[in-house]
Image (cartoon, rainbow, N blue to C red; front, side, top):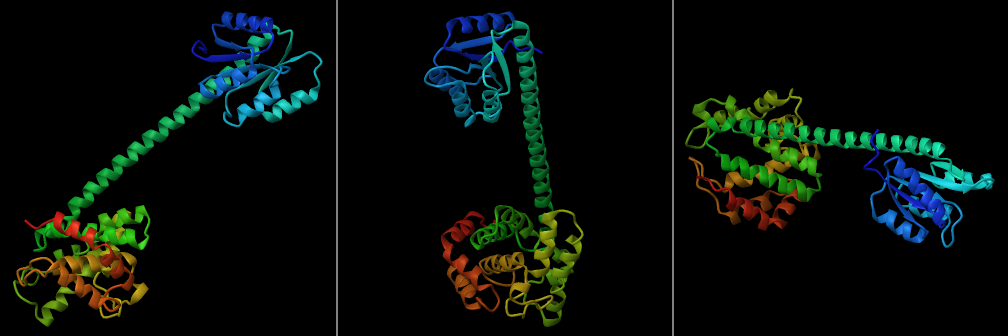
Length: 347
């Protein structure tokens, strides 16, 4: 393996020993930087990228064991060879291993043994770096691929979310506002970021089931008769049936929202007459977002309500039609609601 770019630090208070190490390293075409002051060397290795440390045990101010102990507090993987005098206590070796030394050499240093030990450790270290780099590269590629897949899924969701627009008089702006109102409520309610994003992309499917309602009812420019309204009330189940078997967590959430966004806290909603927490939080959130936006929007059969009147309606129906906590969150964030309201105007 090519070690020419790898950087070695040699530490010994004896200049002759440093010269010997430098000579052997030069013969191996290794870059070596020598220090006779261990404290100076410690500052250097903590502040610079290096690939190996060769350190004498017996030195003034800071011995080899103390040096290794301090260095390993910050740097764990760089190999360290401790050089000890022949006959040094075996406890020194044991302690050095415990502190993080990787190998030992005895004085006087034998160049053949030195080269073999250094090559072995540098080879292992270089392989370790390559594995870590490959792992990071793989992680980066996986992350990039995942982001691309997610982006494509979001694009698909956006396109599918527009499906109902071709039959429903409601606009793309309505769908956008409902999505943003829903995410605002989800955040205020304490849902995590992933849940907020799922809700944001799933909320546009709340009325997908309307594609199964015949035009004469869906597009009627007047109030529906009781019989017509009963037919209209089928759209939550239709939307749910369309989406329920999807493997996408966004479409699964869309199925839940489609089925539950017309349920009411007091049990008077449809299609299943659910009450309180039996209504999925996604449905409770979209119920508020959808009704508020429907009230403040023009329809062929009604004029748009004022922002203030729509807010009063939510307050009046809190605890009856709508989740009390969610209405409170909505009211406490009217400044943000107004920004969404004004940012996505119907054309």
